Image 1 (cartoon, one colour):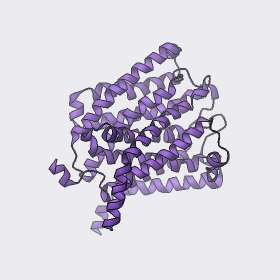
Image 2 (cartoon, rainbow, N blue to C red; image 1 turned 30 degrees about the horizontal axis):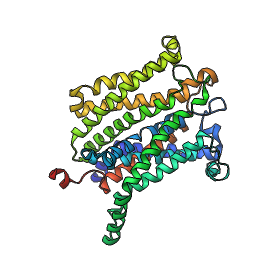
Image 3 (cartoon, rainbow, N blue to C red; image 1 turned 180 degrees about the vertical axis):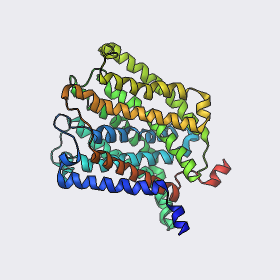
Image 4 (cartoon, rainbow, N blue to C red; image 1 turned 45 degrees about the horizontal axis):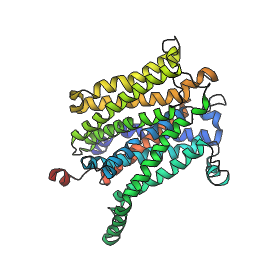
Length: 381
């Protein structure tokens, strides 16, 4: 009995509660209809599920292709210990988005209609859908060795790993291309909304800004995941690698900040910077969290050398990234839609359930697969 009590932790109580609430939210969504599960409407068709889940899940997965490109295409072998965990994070991110489509779409069982029956190759949504499907497939193939290594048949295992080694470069090239396109395409969805998006966020280059924010945010997500793995699973890992990621993320965020200012000046958004409006407060909070605080903190050697400070700074940056995607997809459109959208609790809990499921899968992968370098490899290095 005492052993059972010791095994009961806060997270082992919270996670089942999240799943129970999320499953009930799914019941409302599929058996009672959209109005019972969400506050979405014709005026505000994109809400928490898109702005807080899809756009963020895909953006925070960008570390996968960035680190894979560095290792396999640019020959930066020092980052190889991060390759597997970054691909796992990307796969879980895209997998979560794929699961999310099941409850985001009005009739999810017809998901294949736009792909097979009613293809509109001129639609950017069609491009987004094809990129999600294609890149998720590539991520599954990139992640495959971690599962194949556990096969109990040595001959089959060796042959499959041999063939995978032959195609890994092709997979990384295709994955880099698809992910780069997809990060931009998501921003491109908003290009046709000129006049409906508040000027602080609209730009003809919004697709470029989506791409520019995704890579440093994906790197920060890798820092967060590795830090928590080291603390929770006592993984042996060289923190200098995370410090190097911070060195890369800081100038990228600074460049994005300069690009953001230039867009405001060129396209007239600067006129709205100090108006006494809700959008102004959202804008300034977003940019302090996404640009100002991370650039200053990650440029500090003390922050980069201190694991806890690096972790919390990365958390701030990721929160700023989430705020950016939320502002673009929800806040920026409320001025013209007058929807006054506030997420309903089933929307939040269904998304929380999917995130909790991804965390549980990540935990199981770290425990049972060689996501991180084995101890003997670390000691040999």
